Image: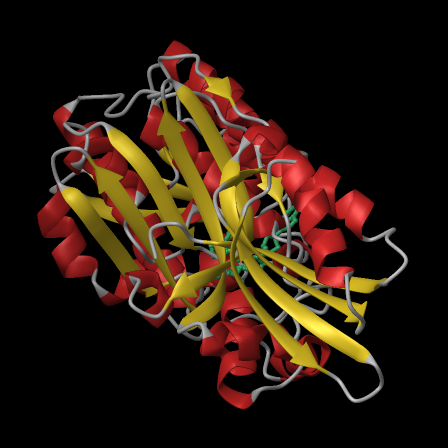
Length: 429
Ligand code: NAP
Ligand code: HSE
């Protein structure tokens, strides 16, 4: 029986899981690929570090050439992260005729085009299922099982940290900062949580999903991103009154040949399938013209779920190697579509503001909205004892630029004390 030699770049959370899974289900993998999977070498930055006993110390190296220049290595698995050295090593691997499996969303969302070009030039596979939503199969299904559809929308809860925080805020009525601190203590949020809470992590993932769903290159810089740092317990209270929850979603859609990709919090009706996805769980909801709506749900990160996606890719490549059919999947961005900037997008909005409680204030505010073509769907007014009132309103569908221009003016009106929240409302809710 042939052996498929694997070189791992990185052996942290995901790398250790990959080694563990290859050992645990070795017999099944051998039957599936008709070859034995052998992890031949593992690149790390510190070979003296204490590691899980599943990692054989003699496999460790700090020299990338031990993998990239070893002609017997068939598959390079990049699970070290980052965009500098990871890019360089992947390019070297592809140019040496090696197949590559990666979990690196940062790199794929930024440099996917270049990496795919080189994979095609050297006739090798480049698979990246683990780069979006960890253990949830979504890239393979979008590229293969749903290829017969014209996809109109992909929307997902694709960041576990922020979903955990928003779920806890919804359940306990607690404030963002307190739940963030708790999430860090529990190990759900990173010491530096910026990429998660500002929506950058989800931005990378939606760039990848949009590129595949709409067959056009969407990179990280094309994605509009807004995080969850300004969501308060009061916003959640209003969401509850409206039979909604608040979720951070990555959302990409195509209409009339124009693509939009964004990440921001939304008020989501409790009847929406994504509203029930709680805690660190992820889910991706896809609309296709033939299939209708489908939802993929599961663990979006973690050692073994992410290893599940990486090992699935390894086995696909291994099977291709054995059958002599590479590359299995080319880049699917064969179109060039316009990417809509956020100012041209259309949404319903929830807006919360504090105003001086006296006659004529409401008409002043609605006058500005009217001039800017922003129509109000509904309004709740709550009087405070100190002579102020809170206005919570929902708009009809409005153009983003019109709303921003109206709010710029409104927040400078003398009786407006603060515009505290501006949150989109998911239209299909
Ligand atoms: P990690 O735990 O920080 O592990 C990184 C590994 O890469 C470590 O083994 C480290 O070596 C090695 N490494 C880093 N820089 C290196 C360098 N310059 N030279 C040699 N080795 C180097 O990271 P991870 O959580 O496993 O994530 C790996 C990748 O998977 C990232 O792209 C991440 O975005 C992606 N991903 C992670 C998850 C998840 O749940 N963790 C989910 C989906 C995707 P040492 O061990 O010596 O420090
Ligand atoms: N930081 C990510 C999350 C996991 O919270 O979902 C890795 O993609």
